[in-house]
Image (cartoon, rainbow, N blue to C red; front, side, top):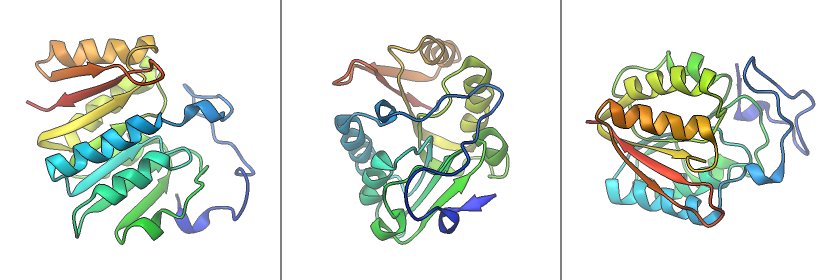
Length: 188
């Protein structure tokens, strides 16, 4: 497993990691819209979330807003299968961890009820997001919030929101400036 210190100094990683369900080349459109990044930061502040997780960090635009929103002593953890970071995340907060690896495998290493807030914007395929959701719900604290990006225009993510609602999660889906959608799920 690689950490932030293993990041190449400039440019894209020399090796692009793919999985059984994810094999796309990186593209600029993967970044969350700026209004989404700001909104995620606001949720963290309003909810007083102190231990937050981001799955699918990409260039780190949302990570910066998440870290800046943390209270004193808060912790940010980011997980991605590739390191495309444009920012030194540690310069935005003191307790910052970026981990390279597959989310489902890495989440299994965390105790139950560990995170107050989780933002998911990684592999959107049903084969990945359903088992990933089962790990996310395990590590999410009671009353915690999960935010999923791309819940309007990607069918499998939209299907996951319907799945969560069926199992009595409170689900609110909001439109975003680019029409991609952001859904908030609160653990019952």
